Length: 58
Image (cartoon, rainbow, N blue to C red; front, side):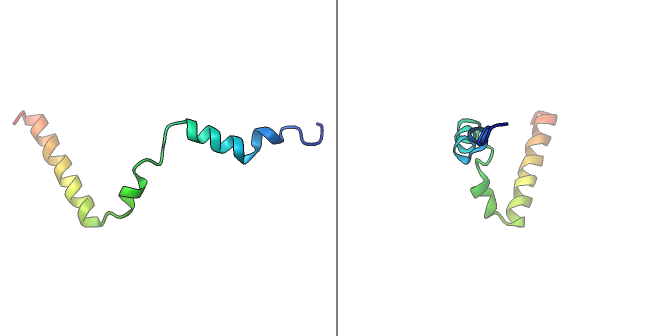
């Protein structure tokens, strides 16, 4: 192996470029970070009500 071989493939410049081209897996993380337990409970309750409506066709 030559000195410096493979360095370009592991440089942070290429990693960040590759990451920015892919899907944004952190999309929405900022919005979720500030939620409280009460917000999460109400969101679960809403989801459950929607699932019940879908199951029973109401």
